[in-house]
Image 1: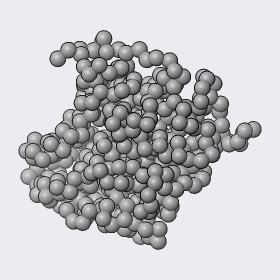
Image 2 (image 1 turned 135 degrees about the horizontal axis):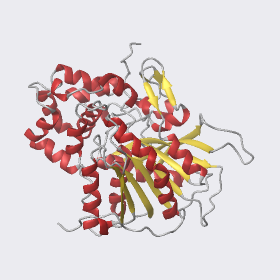
Image 3 (image 1 turned 45 degrees about the vertical axis):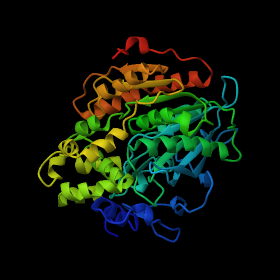
Image 4 (image 1 turned 60 degrees about the vertical axis):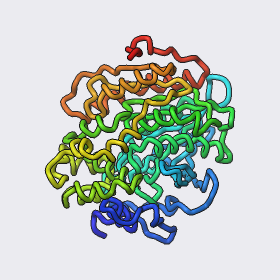
Length: 437
């Protein structure tokens, strides 16, 4: 099989990019052989048409696991498929994983649950975070997939916190293309992961378990969205607190920042996701993209973040358009694109629970300014916001400027979330931000 062949999903992805039949109309079946860049995706990830919140589950072997007196360390993992709702209001199957920790929860009350929204993984099904728990590093000559969220997950498990991880719509589940950084798809998938964990039999999680959300980068956008959406979409889930690290709250600003950067390939994932979510945008793509641009979108649709860094590092979108315009210029010229991106904006609805917004002051990949604006917007609405500017000196590469705050702030972020899960009130820092217009 050629290096860039994935059947039947690649054909669906190309069709979505070039304006043909929608991916959602061509679901894979359990009899299909789905291979993404040389990685065979287990049949578990082929979504059926079954109804119900929790569709199916099975044991998930953790790659990093040790025997313990009370069971394997750090815990027992279960692969999940659950129902969610996409941005069009349609049911969608989402995969993920639940991990029951071996460690005891020592802060009183029932064991808490945290839903982890992964950062950018890519768009190929082999990039799913739940697969990263089983294969933390996957290098086979065709793809490079790294389960870098495992560190945060294991740190929470060590505290006795149960963890559920979402793969998002279309990442892992093989019936559609992943709608990268889509506000509604991401927020819904996070909240429905909590419901799926509650519906899983044989766990210590109950309806009384405090619930928190954790995410950085793409994950920070998804948890920020989930915190906003929770009162209307999931009133049955009372959130104790949400960590939103480096959230891409304003995709217009983020699109401009990543163009030509170390992670320029994310432009392709975003455009692919836009076309998957809103077929009305396809004529614009047909008109504006040249052959190289359409080929790049199809290529990136099967890539993980490691692949994109190797193949599209410092790529400029001007090489992908028919007239040499940048994607930012195309957005400015197309009202339909402006409207779509405006509807993706996070920060217009007040979260009903505490949120910790953290962003590196020198982050130029997911720009610091637009993340800070999110905190200001929420503060103006009277939300309980803890804003943390993470001070890391400029490191010369945009990817380092973005990734380093994730590591340096991770312990403090998890401690803050643990305090919320323990019932300790948050201390808003809105007083330090210019909350008046």
